[in-house]
Image: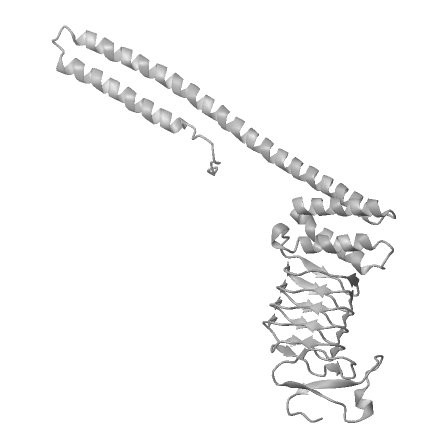
Amino acid sequence: MATKRRSGEYPILSSQTIAVVFLLLLGGAVAAIWWLLHAYSNSPDVLAVCGIVVIGAGALGSWWLAARRQQLAERTLRENQRALWHAERALQHTEFDAAQRRMAELYTAAAGQLSAGQETVRLAGLCALEAAAHHHPPARESVVNLLCALLRGPVDEQPRVRAAVQRVLAKHLRPEAFWPDVELDLSGAELTDVDLSGCEVAAVRFTGAVFHGTADFSRTRFIGDALFNDATFHGRARFDEAEFRGQAWFTAAGFHEHAGFGRTVFQAPGDFTATTFHRGAELGSAVTPADARVRLDLPFEVVREWPDGWQVRPPIVEAEGAVAGLDGVWGELVPVGRKS
């Protein structure tokens, strides 16, 4: 079976080629001598000419020996090239395995630092994890999952660490140091002053998350599904000019301050079913706010802008204005023309 020649290898002069060329030259020499002997049998110079031909035949023998030596040299070169290629492949595998071991050791050490008691040690572990993930893309998913797990954990007495984790995640969801295909699972997490403005994220899960302070998602691009079901926003929620390319779920979410969705793009209708708006709200037209509730007894004016075709229906009886677990009088967001 013919062996495929690798890039950079020279073709070996084959034995068949050597034999064919040698036989052609030898045959030519014999034919020349035979012709000279018969054509110039009476010439005194014919023997001299035949001698020259014989010398030429000897040169043929020398050429054949040189060809064989060339063939041997080429075979040796081919074997050396193959040995070098295998050695390079083995070195590449060794370097890759060594890099994987170093990454695993660094990840283990940094994760241990991140769970330490001292704040400075935890911040150092966070820096080490960030650097490792930035220079070793296969580790990014594991690092992001570890950081999300930290934020989902109990709120400790080191807010600087949690704030630093949030900044690291946001940093690598922006163009300057972008990590593609990142998914955030922060279900049930308690987050303070979240700033993911101008980020791009593959998918997010904030189901049951609690946001303290401002939650800024303005100009954020959500490539996949964005789940904010049962999330609670105690501060201002900013989704202005955000883009939801997948499904956006805000089912039963609670907005205690202004909820801004000005010029927000929903490629699929955003679901605000059973959402509660305690203060002001600005919703775009591509949302579904069925059964959403709006507090009515505020002692001050707030700006509220509902999707086209929707309006707030005040309670007809006192029981309709109550929402379990919440103070105040509540109206219901209903389609225009609906009376009950």
